[in-house]
Image: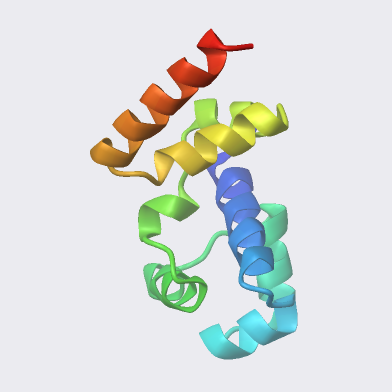
Length: 110
């Protein structure tokens, strides 16, 4: 079973990689050790709200981005479908409606 620490750590790793940072760079910016970033990413250690705030600031994500639902984490493991779900989850209602119309048109013309 995937724990909250596992999910949180996977998200930190994902956004760290997306930001083009290695563990040492993120650790220096957040004010923790590289070992601590590794433990967080592996899900073997939790962290304080203060550190979560700093992680969010350095990774340029809102706090909820680091706490995905169990269902989303299972979808993420399915490859392209998971990628689409993650991308769609970041859109506003207007953008989702536009994508929905585009997808409907695309599927109507195989």
